[in-house]
Length: 464
Ligand SMILES: *Cc1c(COP(=O)(O)O)cnc(C)c1O
Image (cartoon, rainbow, N blue to C red; front, top):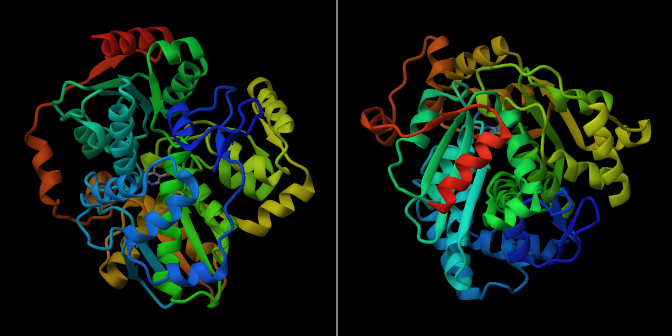
């Protein structure tokens, strides 16, 4: 598989190069040159595989023999042996029509571990093989940071700097990131919101001199390898719920911020998995809901919500989807993204909107509905949802027709977001690794939301 940019000025690079480039050098996003098409007989074989076997089969479509078979198998085994559940991403049944895909059994209790445990291994592998230094730079609304740090802490040849919005992540998220004592980790606590953090790092990545002088590497979902790793659990979940291929289509409901996770679902569908609707769940930061309902992509005012990992207005991965839905025309995408920078909005034609609506449904879940969903599901089934997963469930119930089966993604463990759980009057017991965080010392640097100040702090750390 070769990779190209949505904006057309980076073409046909290999898997490792795409992994290391992160954001495409023309400011666009990297995508596979062709989406692999999985024959039905292959799907049938895959339906009997265990999780890591399936990971291997799917990854080989994307890695293009650049990693020897045995090495890839070892990387996958090492990545998923850190999960607490033997199935890695198990399914739980809530009702005959609604299943939960539990994605939070990794080391930091959120779905980001599924991709970032693998990316941590892969960075380490590449650093050793090529003898290069790798300096990871990322922005987080809370979960990516913790997960990426966990993936590379203490690893030789790798440093990691994570920007998070000061005071706008949950207590447990903050502790997970800032209580790591390894010298290869720097946490910058930025005055501003997640969009500010993401904009600053995208600008630093787009500055190619800065990027190469500092050996920058990306762990955000601008990196296609994140998407690749997340495609797997759509297949796995489908097989667990629907059994063999040939059964009816299944919907997926996905709590969304950066359009990353749901884009992985879109890829799975394009690869041939019989997905019905992709239901996009947002919170009050509902730019993507408005796009799917009205065809206008326009960031609104940033709001703080009970689901902080989805408090995002400018969704990076949206550009990848736009590329596909508007007919794979890189010049058009380059023009639209330039226009977006100036005018702050993108509108699509009514035909394009019809295409969007044939694949996606959307529901913005307001705070009260999020909390009432947590309470109701707890009362009815004794299952405790985290606020992000609750948005997924609420959207599934809003958007799925009677008789349809929906798999809703449970993206985090409730212990990460006790702020919301407490408001429901529910007391929860923390898992031991989370409880232990409260006694650890924190390390972080508070910094103004200013690109120059942040660039200096990053350079000093990477060169130190
Ligand atoms: C990151 C995150 C999301 C949103 O995922 P995207 O890939 O940004 O759409 C949802 N829920 C949780 C718990 C997250 O950490």
